[in-house]
Amino acid sequence: MHKYLRAIGFGQIKNRKQLQLLITDCIRTAKQRDYISLSEQEDFIFMECCKEFCEGMGIAVRGEFDENNNYIYDYYFPYLRGNYVSSEEDVSIERHAEKESYAGICDDLRIGVSLIFYFQNVISYLKYKERKQLPVKGTTLNLSALSCQGTVIMPIIKNEKEMKKVKQVSRNRSHLIAAARKGDEEAIENLTLEDMDTYTAISKKIRKEDVFSIVDTYFMPYGVECDQYSILGEIVESQKLQNHVTGEYVYHLTINCNELLFDLCINAEDLLGEPEVGRRFKGIIWMQGYINFPDN
Image 1: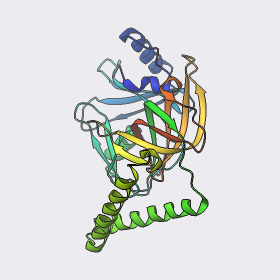
Image 2: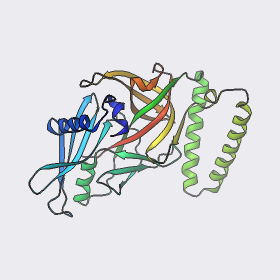
Image 3: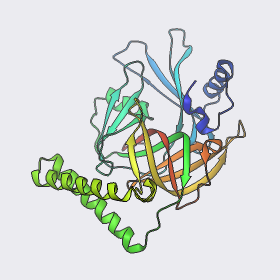
Image 4: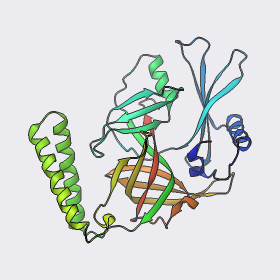
């Protein structure tokens, strides 16, 4: 059973029988179906069925047709469609070893690490691959995330001057990282000195202050799975929705983390605190991504 099913309002599913009924319903009453026949695999028709249970969030079922034209599902996953363009950087796609699913890798300078996410619109990518039109230029990326563990904490009070200073520092650091990747030794040295100064300043403050009054936002890999992260970011938008099948309530949040904007969904029972705009969300997330291809 998928760990993040509860994030979209299916926290009451406890056994395989209930799950099978849910998957069967998704296949039979899917609002969106997409398929592709791959020339490299004879008689292989790969199809994806998607059904939404709240606005922008639902379950995707992927599988193939056998020789008798019967659909056999391979796997499923809960999803949330992102509403905002999170990045315009180039994205690399890699297939997972065990099944026809894919991961995306995006090197966005605002994060400081390679951002790895679970790729949502695989069929669109496979169509480009089948037509031998890869790589595709001019794409954008909509990020989204599901969470089963989160806490709302209060923001750090900053005046307008301090907010402008933070944004300027972030932009300067992005420029330095970009230069360092190109081999600029001066930029590498400046980044090293900046990190040392930051470490020294935090070491002094942490003796008297709480860590979350010093650290405004962070984005860090979490655990052994490469598409899961521990984050702390500002809540830009907050909406409470109800799963129309189970009646469970979920929060649909828009998060600004390290100036990276993405949507997040979490079950109301898994969130500690009231998610008001301006407050911060701290939690563990499973990152997903939807690539906007030119012909979408």
